[in-house]
Image 1 (cartoon, rainbow, N blue to C red):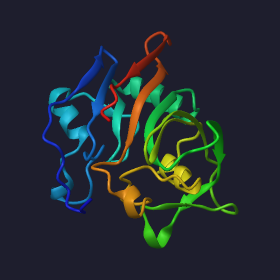
Image 2 (image 1 turned 30 degrees about the vertical axis):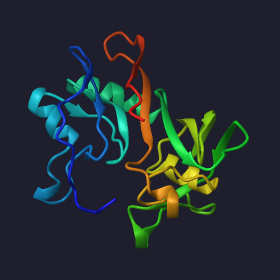
Image 3 (image 1 turned 45 degrees about the vertical axis):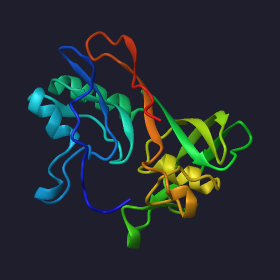
Image 4 (image 1 turned 180 degrees about the vertical axis):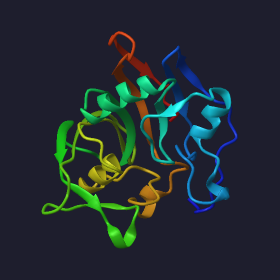
Length: 215
């Protein structure tokens, strides 16, 4: 995977829209928010705001991760959703393909994470200074050289799923930061935000939104 930013030229995939919420399916290879410099200006936020000028950012996905992202369509909705993420009241599930045979079939990774300053934006496990980070996993099926797994982050640290899977010895396929050798050779990062459960800002009803698995 090269360092040249070449985001996909695909139409906006809207999952749900109402007066407060906009849910979209983010394509892989597209930044959630603009990077530094004009060459990194194209991002999901800009594309969303071209169609929904009032849209406001709530959270992010890594550039190479695909799947469900929510935007707020009012400042009050943004505050409401922001608090849900901050207080861990949302539930996110991801599907990943990881290198090798992940065993046992269910488990929890509990490893604190911190930014690897000399190599940022990379993150690393640090038992003394890291912030708490937990991820539940459940094996969906075994493949030839890989395992398809559902991941549920209980915390929201940067690169959490990617670092936790590598720490288990099963990096996510196609990960340009944390996979090496044949595990890195996949056509994309095999990580997809499959579902997001949240409470609607207008009335607090629990809702679940899903994005179809692309791999």
